[in-house]
Length: 150
Image (cartoon, rainbow, N blue to C red):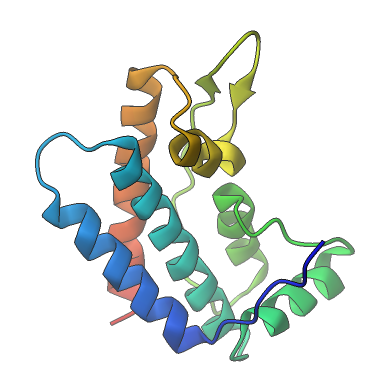
């Protein structure tokens, strides 16, 4: 597998704002592509806040820190895991972690929050109510990230 590219905290902050701006400018009912931008924006924002709170500067340092603290690698697309990691950092903001719905997919599969990006990236048919519920939770998280990144 290819090595993950290193990203600086300031780049993550810019990406968070850019993705969120595009999502918001869409107006009206959002498509899976819009939700994907919201998801990736939040991922960028959470990583930026974590990096700032552990007093580091890059994603490589964040991943190393996470592994040293938890004895395993961080799944960078698992928003729930990122949110839970904030609880282990005393100086970090604490997010109100709600229950993310699983999206029913093909067969008996269900996509947890760590797979939302795949559902939206590939356009997998899934329950629209679950997706809307997840979107509302993500919007709340995005608002809190905005407040913290001021």
